[in-house]
Length: 360
Image (cartoon, rainbow, N blue to C red; front, side):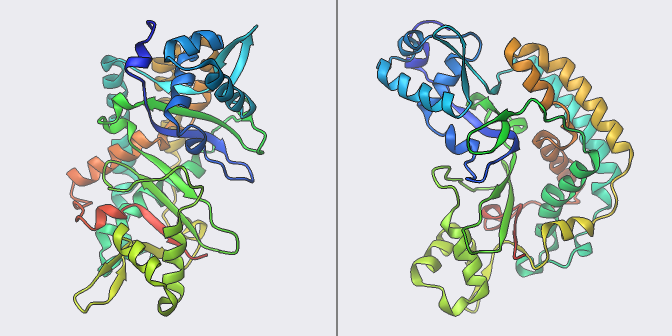
């Protein structure tokens, strides 16, 4: 990294995720690392330990600004003092060559085909009686596959060693991981599942899988997004929905006008819990445990040596449960579209695809 490189052309993270759990304050990693300055400080101290003076010089920032940011990152476990007055980032950053990306893609395709042939292709949307806009079973099947099926696979595999997760002051234990935004046009790096905090006093929960197939924007400056509460209140009592809430829901596409000048909910809604929905799906084939181990080893052998030495223990944890990574989910969607199990989405559907509001 040459002097002033990041000053002239700063890097940007895409898909900031984590392995582990959030604390009682529900502060998402995406929120903590949402600022560009934070991302560039972490990247500067990623490969080798850097002093505050070195970071300031590379980023063209005043020393006090870097000191304040380092204090925040150190307090929250995203950076550590590795040696006297020098800091190292505690985050996994994917920055692979085209050759490695192509090899990863072949691995994901191979195992996604197995998941599709042996499980996904046998799933029917009719197995779950959930609300779907206009009774569209195709739209429902998207959510069943991306959220419920892969949650069931994840529970069946049960293979994650979490003893080396970073313990944070808010009670969370996790390891953040991300990729550089130069990957954002590659399908392998545009997916993650999100569970959103429910405001105090409300019982609903919302889960969504974000990908290149939707048109959503997540505002990480808010721990929960008001439109989810608006939607719940609208479903519970439409007559009491205030004009501002109604406009917000229409603007974002959660409500859509019908031909009778009424509105319909433009998302999947379940009156049973997520766990109960998952229980209604067929059992996962036992061989998926073997598939997960094989894929995890192949990916680990390919990728772990490419991370900085102080990150490899974290990377080994990341590559334990690879059969449910976003790359597999996206490959499975591709295969389902090619085989016409899934149909392309309409403009309205792209706003809320792979989103389920659970009322319990």
